[in-house]
Image 1: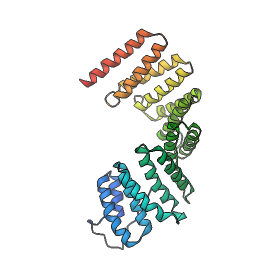
Image 2: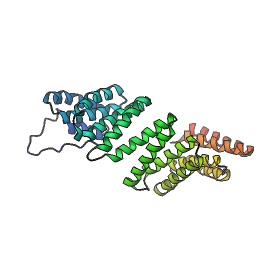
Image 3: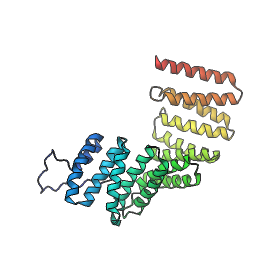
Image 4: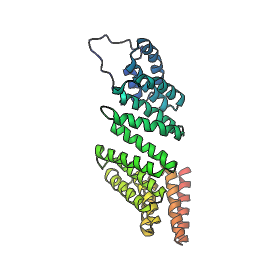
Length: 301
């Protein structure tokens, strides 16, 4: 994270019409992304003339963050292309370099350019972890993102390595009972399931569920997500009665979140019905599907 430069009380207060880096950061904090983008562009003109290299790079970083939030990959790329060369001979600026690469990696990921994102993620992680004051929590989040890219590419060993490393870092820094830790357990379970390791997936999904049941109210949709994941892994292992129980509980929870999660309700109902059908319980499967159609039809009225 870029730290704001504290205002020196002995200096005159700048004209409010002239943007400063503090103004840009404040706009980012308030999610005024278009204002932040415009202010950073105006500020850059002055900073380039002044020759304050590190402040210039911090402004480029803020501009990249605003542009990424607006989906403007070309602006993110341009900001990083200008800022990164300014830091190449500054080992003490590894953290700042890593944060610039982070914005570019996430923007490329969002733009569905996995090969390019993969390279930037790897470099950003290396910089953030090698900095004099390592940005381990940010690097862990990037490792999780990179793991999902590797999963999509079928590179399961690399995906597992990054996901486990991210999980260990977050669990050490945040404690086990934290939603980000639960999300990592869920992602690792998804990875194992996709790779064909249902027993390992079941354990990860069960860990995610246990954490979420501690942290969240009983009717939270994330608990339902963990239950459906767990049910799917149980079915692969032949634990069909337990899987049916988990599907039924998830569907009940999602019914209570219908306005926000109609798609999740529909998907869970179909998975539940498909399992019943696979077990030869056709009447029950038909009943689940009919109830789901009725519920969803009522939502659209």
